[in-house]
Image (tube, rainbow, N blue to C red; front, side):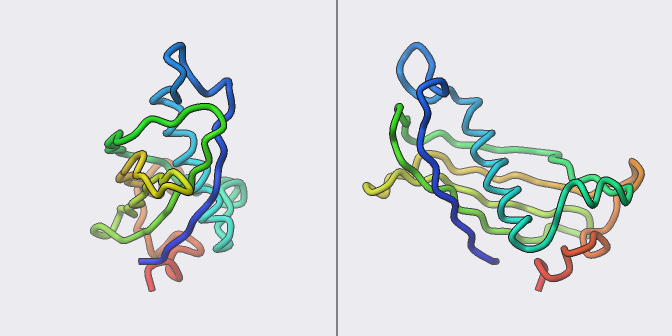
Amino acid sequence: MEDFELEFEVRDYECDFQGIVNNSVYLNYLEHARHKYLLERGINFTSLHTEGIDLVVSRTEIDYKYSLTSGDRFIVRVKTKREGHLRMVFEQEAIKVPEGKTVVKAKVIGVGLSNGRPMKIEDIPGFRALLG
Protein backbone atom coordinates (compact mmCIF):
# COMPACT_ATOMS: atom_id res chain seq x y z
CA MET A 1 0.00 0.00 0.00
CA GLU A 2 1.29 3.40 -0.97
CA ASP A 3 0.77 6.47 1.22
CA PHE A 4 -0.30 9.91 0.03
CA GLU A 5 -1.23 13.04 2.00
CA LEU A 6 -2.93 16.27 1.01
CA GLU A 7 -3.48 19.25 3.31
CA PHE A 8 -6.73 21.23 3.47
CA GLU A 9 -8.23 24.15 5.40
CA VAL A 10 -11.94 24.33 6.22
CA ARG A 11 -13.72 27.20 4.46
CA ASP A 12 -16.63 29.06 6.09
CA TYR A 13 -19.22 27.96 3.55
CA GLU A 14 -18.48 24.27 4.22
CA CYS A 15 -19.99 24.55 7.70
CA ASP A 16 -23.64 24.07 8.62
CA PHE A 17 -25.75 26.07 11.08
CA GLN A 18 -24.09 24.20 13.97
CA GLY A 19 -20.75 25.71 12.94
CA ILE A 20 -19.22 22.35 11.96
CA VAL A 21 -18.32 20.91 8.57
CA ASN A 22 -21.40 19.38 6.97
CA ASN A 23 -21.07 15.60 6.76
CA SER A 24 -21.45 15.57 2.97
CA VAL A 25 -18.47 17.92 2.55
CA TYR A 26 -16.12 15.22 3.84
CA LEU A 27 -16.95 13.20 0.72
CA ASN A 28 -15.63 16.12 -1.37
CA TYR A 29 -12.39 16.24 0.65
CA LEU A 30 -11.89 12.49 0.21
CA GLU A 31 -12.63 12.64 -3.52
CA HIS A 32 -10.25 15.54 -4.11
CA ALA A 33 -7.45 13.69 -2.30
CA ARG A 34 -8.08 10.54 -4.36
CA HIS A 35 -7.97 12.55 -7.59
CA LYS A 36 -4.71 14.27 -6.61
CA TYR A 37 -3.26 10.90 -5.60
CA LEU A 38 -4.07 9.42 -9.00
CA LEU A 39 -2.90 12.50 -10.92
CA GLU A 40 0.47 12.42 -9.15
CA ARG A 41 0.81 8.85 -10.42
CA GLY A 42 0.00 9.81 -14.00
CA ILE A 43 -3.62 8.64 -14.00
CA ASN A 44 -5.82 11.31 -15.58
CA PHE A 45 -9.63 10.97 -15.49
CA THR A 46 -10.16 13.12 -18.59
CA SER A 47 -7.65 11.19 -20.68
CA LEU A 48 -9.12 7.87 -19.59
CA HIS A 49 -12.64 9.05 -20.42
CA THR A 50 -11.61 9.96 -23.97
CA GLU A 51 -10.33 6.38 -24.26
CA GLY A 52 -13.73 5.03 -23.17
CA ILE A 53 -12.64 4.23 -19.60
CA ASP A 54 -14.41 5.73 -16.59
CA LEU A 55 -13.35 5.37 -12.95
CA VAL A 56 -16.36 5.33 -10.65
CA VAL A 57 -17.06 4.85 -6.96
CA SER A 58 -19.21 1.80 -6.27
CA ARG A 59 -19.27 1.98 -2.46
CA THR A 60 -18.27 4.32 0.37
CA GLU A 61 -18.11 3.56 4.08
CA ILE A 62 -17.33 6.49 6.36
CA ASP A 63 -16.99 6.83 10.12
CA TYR A 64 -17.20 10.36 11.53
CA LYS A 65 -14.97 10.71 14.60
CA TYR A 66 -14.43 14.42 15.26
CA SER A 67 -16.01 17.62 13.90
CA LEU A 68 -14.03 20.29 12.10
CA THR A 69 -14.89 24.00 12.17
CA SER A 70 -14.04 26.97 9.95
CA GLY A 71 -10.31 27.58 9.66
CA ASP A 72 -9.28 24.14 10.92
CA ARG A 73 -6.35 22.58 9.07
CA PHE A 74 -6.26 18.88 8.34
CA ILE A 75 -4.67 16.31 6.08
CA VAL A 76 -6.32 13.54 4.12
CA ARG A 77 -4.30 10.34 3.78
CA VAL A 78 -4.82 7.81 1.01
CA LYS A 79 -3.70 4.18 0.83
CA THR A 80 -4.72 1.78 -1.89
CA LYS A 81 -5.06 -1.94 -2.28
CA ARG A 82 -6.70 -4.30 -4.68
CA GLU A 83 -9.81 -6.26 -3.78
CA GLY A 84 -10.40 -9.05 -6.28
CA HIS A 85 -9.92 -8.45 -10.01
CA LEU A 86 -12.32 -5.53 -10.41
CA ARG A 87 -12.09 -3.35 -7.31
CA MET A 88 -9.56 -0.85 -6.02
CA VAL A 89 -9.93 0.05 -2.36
CA PHE A 90 -8.96 3.52 -1.16
CA GLU A 91 -8.46 3.54 2.60
CA GLN A 92 -8.65 7.16 3.67
CA GLU A 93 -8.55 9.18 6.83
CA ALA A 94 -8.66 12.85 7.68
CA ILE A 95 -6.45 14.01 10.56
CA LYS A 96 -6.71 17.43 12.24
CA VAL A 97 -3.37 19.18 12.49
CA PRO A 98 -1.46 19.91 14.56
CA GLU A 99 -3.44 17.93 17.17
CA GLY A 100 -3.36 14.64 15.26
CA LYS A 101 -7.04 13.90 15.97
CA THR A 102 -8.76 11.49 13.61
CA VAL A 103 -11.67 13.30 11.96
CA VAL A 104 -13.00 10.64 9.59
CA LYS A 105 -12.03 7.16 8.42
CA ALA A 106 -13.33 5.91 5.11
CA LYS A 107 -13.18 2.95 2.78
CA VAL A 108 -13.98 3.86 -0.80
CA ILE A 109 -14.28 1.17 -3.46
CA GLY A 110 -13.67 2.16 -7.04
CA VAL A 111 -14.09 0.25 -10.28
CA GLY A 112 -13.16 0.86 -13.88
CA LEU A 113 -15.71 0.74 -16.67
CA SER A 114 -14.77 0.31 -20.31
CA ASN A 115 -17.62 1.63 -22.43
CA GLY A 116 -19.94 0.94 -19.47
CA ARG A 117 -18.71 -2.59 -18.74
CA PRO A 118 -16.56 -3.58 -15.71
CA MET A 119 -12.88 -4.12 -16.43
CA LYS A 120 -9.97 -5.65 -14.54
CA ILE A 121 -8.07 -3.12 -12.44
CA GLU A 122 -4.70 -4.10 -13.94
CA ASP A 123 -6.06 -3.36 -17.44
CA ILE A 124 -6.70 0.31 -16.58
CA PRO A 125 -3.76 2.36 -17.91
CA GLY A 126 -1.48 3.33 -15.02
CA PHE A 127 -3.07 1.07 -12.42
CA ARG A 128 -0.62 -1.80 -12.83
CA ALA A 129 2.04 0.41 -11.19
CA LEU A 130 -0.31 1.13 -8.25
CA LEU A 131 -0.76 -2.60 -7.70
CA GLY A 132 2.98 -3.20 -7.41
